[in-house]
Length: 169
Image (cartoon, rainbow, N blue to C red; front, side, top):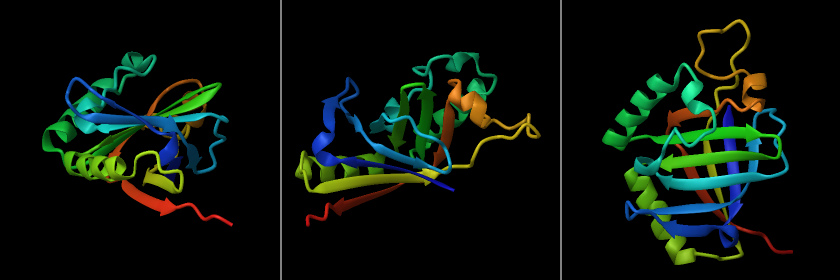
């Protein structure tokens, strides 16, 4: 299964972090399997080196946090995969994407050349493995009920980026 997040370039804001790397924030549309998405979804795109698991509410209480941190640390050191974290609250879905260095640089270059263009739509897609079932207590993935109650969903892998021109009638 695939999770897809779409955004308009004209609605992104950019900020330069202390790490001297750009991050982009904006609202997005989200399609994630059969998940009922809150009306508001926010997307944060950043360099994987700036990707942090501890800024999700209640994340430190999760038993798999230490294992996820180890995997993320390896990904950050090697710079070969992307990361995605989704967190659900009653009024919004938060999506943070950490791009590997080369992809982050290419994404940033494209955005800087086309920043705020109202006719461009971006799309980021990544693997979505579904939710754990009650028959899989060893799974690191949350159940859908745990996710809706606030347990984050974390995935490492290769994310695809696509930009399209918005069709005008």
